[in-house]
Length: 155
View 1 (tube, rainbow, N blue to C red):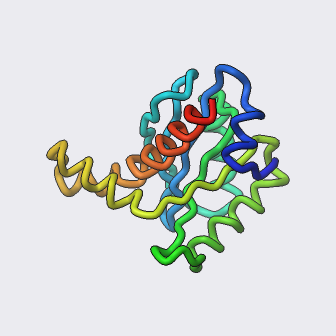
View 2: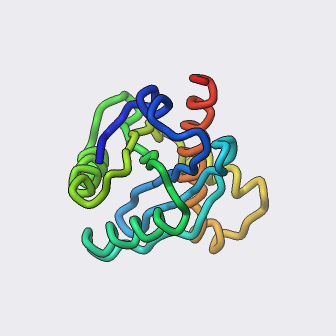
View 3: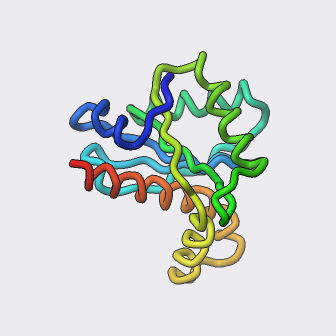
């Protein structure tokens, strides 16, 4: 596994391949997948977190099923740009994935992604209970869409 910048990822990706967006939470991993042309992010059901080994196996099974070429993982920076404990946990998760997969990971600044996802779900008039179920995957889709837009701009 390699950690790539978005610019390096743009150069390394095959022409038509899906990538996954991840919103790593303490209880769930929000998932989203791009289409093969990498224009649109679509939320997928969350993975319930158990322990790292099981989480990694579930994530890699998901990647195999969806033919994923790379992961975009949200990096939950503080609003002032500093790195807090959640950033450290995310980086540790990626480091621990390194021996398990050759798929590249790219970090994406996810500040306000959950807020944006919550607003989008509110605008769609999704009930409070369903919002709670869908927020992590909606945030993953928001993270992935930001990266897809950047990849598209890079050509």
